[in-house]
Length: 247
Image (tube, rainbow, N blue to C red; front, side):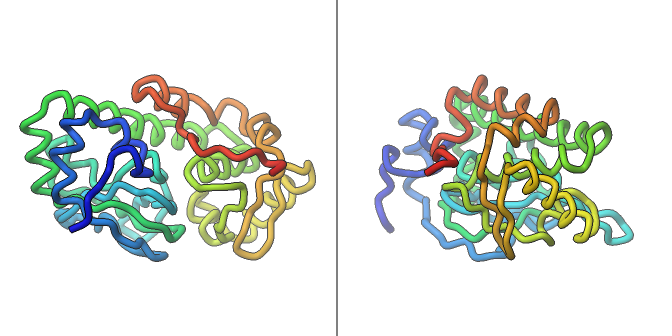
């Protein structure tokens, strides 16, 4: 089993753990590739592992009884899947899968739960992270209820940009439609609006950020609060690997 060095891991949560907390997990860590559509958390099935993403984008989706589905949150290198167990819940009806392929570090669920039980400081840290994910969900509900489609689209693109390297986002119109809970044709029209103000360039399977500040301006009040809360309670910028859109 490979040795994991806390100074070189690319997941923010693992970097922020105490030295003792990291040591509690490192002996059972396994580096894994995470292909497109890989299921990190299955609906109503006990999770066997927690996954700390290093690259790629995980999508948290909720479905209705009549098979309608919408994305309610993102996970990138700032976070981890399977965090419902921090709240002493064995399963969740939501589903998490890879929307952009990447890689991560798996930790067996038993190892993770034992570390939480043995280290109250570590448990408090992950509870703070869960708080930021709940706030992300709350602001998704706010955006859906009170903001226009182009504002919501700008928010979701910014959230993807926060979690992926560089300024090219390998996301499809179908994914954006799922995120926003609308038809694909509606997403295409709104992408044209953002292109028209030179905030992005959209091609098949890719959205390039041209002007991040313009996107923030368009998103208005539906972007920023969860991001600032993440930085406040965890102590590190959400987008630590930010690259200038002009690069």
